[in-house]
Structures are given as structure tokens and as C-alpha cells.
Length: 244
Ligand SMILES: Nc1ncnc2c1ncn2[C@@H]1O[C@H](COP(=O)(O)OP(=O)(O)OP(=O)(O)O)[C@@H](O)[C@H]1O
Image (tube, rainbow, N blue to C red; front, side, top):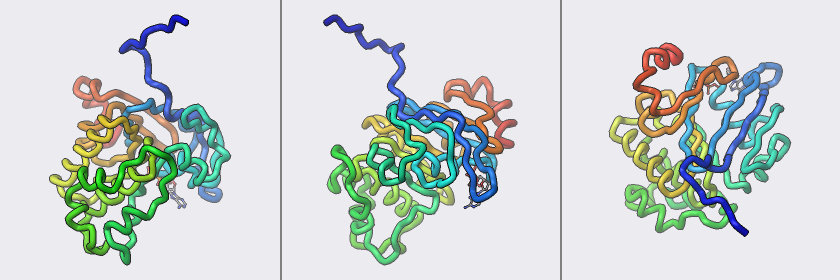
């Protein structure tokens, strides 16, 4: 049967589609109807002031926010009522702001901790090729690692699980500019290798170099969106929105 050829104009398949997402912490409304999309292979960034609802959005996508309603489709599958374990098996991994490195375990033990949930994950050797620092420090205890090494480890270990859709929460927070640049290189490399990334970032300068598209969240709703190529011509308005 004849099939239409793939053209550049054809959009990539949807990795994530969020519609009317409402989320609560107890009685407190944190998300008030979030709508957003992430396509396969994109790097998408959530921006916004403190307390806007960015982290809560990531937590809702991976099923960690218990009180959530609306629609969250991952690779076309409705996940709003699914448990975190089942969502993880769809190939989604979350790297939280606090990184979650176990102090009493070595770098390598931390690396081997998350279970492999799908085929296609990176091997330990591939991870060490990507992060030579971690190889050098593989026998060091988690707490002996620098902040940058801990962040690299937190990203590296989710690459083993087979997840191809990565949710990164403030992965540059508190890190020196040289390490921030390294994390930028890592995210670009992951994109080249076919990973999809949804990230939360306070550091707009950094995000504007790595992300393809942006959503601005305020008081639990998306109030604006733009593409990286729009930034130069629309900088004053964007900085105003972000309170920069
Ligand atoms: N564990 C929690 N319990 C109760 N309320 C919470 C909790 N975590 C966040 N909130 C509230 O939910 C709202 C959204 O918070 P969220 O952490 O998603 O914001 P954010 O945009 O990620 O901001 P930040 O950059 O400060 O992390 C805020 O009003 C916050 O106070």
C-alpha cells in the first residue's frame, strides 16, 4: 500500500499531552487547569515565579501528586488515575530538585539503584563514557561528591532505566557556571540521542540555550508560551512575564 512520505513539516508524535490539569495539596489548589504538550525529541521548559506550580506539574505527570484531575496522556495513554510505578513503565523518569542521592551508598551503587523498567536503557559503561567524572568517582560515597557530580549522577542513573522521557527539576540550582554549561551539553547530547526532556528551570539564561520551547506558569495555569527562536525579538515582554 502506498504511504505518504515523511516530510519535515510533519509534527513528531506527542509524548505528553496535558489538558485541564488541576492539582491539590490537601485543601490548597496548586494547579488550576494546566494545558501543555511535549513532542517526541523536544526539550521543553517550564518557567515561572516561585510557587507558580512548575514542580507540582512534574509531580503530577509522574503520578506523585495524589490529588490530581483532568487529562494527562503519555504516548497517547491516559495516566491520570495510574500509580507512579505504572507511569514509570511507560518510559518516564523524574529527577527531583533534591536529587535523592543516597549518602551511605557509593556512586556506582547509587547508579545501579533504580530498576531497569524497559529495554533500551544505557549500560553502565555507556553512562561512564558520557560522564567520565562519575567513573573516576565510582567508589566514592554519595555525600563526598560535589553538587555538580551529584546532579550528573541523578541524571545518569535515570538513563539506565530505559526511560526516554526525562523530567528534570531545577537541575542547575546552586551549581557553578562551568558545571551548568556541562549540564547544558549533557541535555543537548541526550536530545541528539533521541531523548525527550521536560524541565523546570529558574535560570532563564541557561534554559534559553537548551530548550526548544517554553511555557510560563503562573498561579497554576499556563499564561504564555514561546519558542527559542522567538526570544530575541520578544525579549522585553518575556523578561517582564518572568519578572527578570
Ligand atoms: N508539599 C506541599 N504541601 C503543600 N503545599 C505545597 C507543597 N508543595 C508545594 N506547595 C504549594 O503549591 C504551590 C505550587 O508549588 P510548586 O512547588 O509547584 O511551585 P514551583 O513553581 O515549582 O516553585 P519553586 O520554584 O519555588 O519550586 C505553591 O503555592 C506551594 O506553596
